[in-house]
Image 1 (cartoon, rainbow, N blue to C red):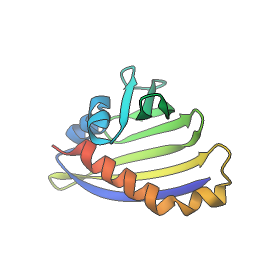
Image 2: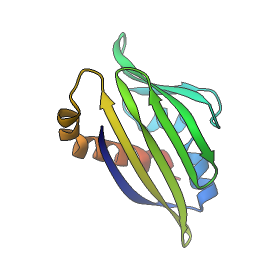
Image 3: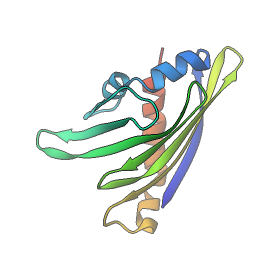
Image 4: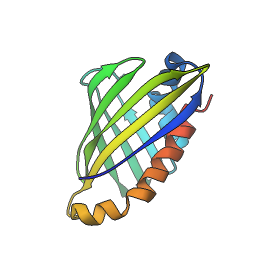
Length: 136
């Protein structure tokens, strides 16, 4: 699987940042052409990020595998065409919070070596999304 990670400093304490990071409405607002829906997040919760325009698009189905507010969550991508997992770790950094985002991903029908070529762009897109989602 392809992978990437980043650290980002976000304003506010971990409890506030956690609440913003896992608010599905914030995901919808921050990620272009994407609507995120699902049950309240917690262990075993399922949610979907639908990206597209009209009938053209795809679903990114996910399941929360580990939930440790306000410090760590593990989410697995369980659909098609996307699989993989992400680990989000939050830790205090003075009055702010540092998020470490670690992600693996694969795309159905695409060799891992080819998917890995997109890692810099995928990383940049997720970094931008996380910044937008967690903005106070």
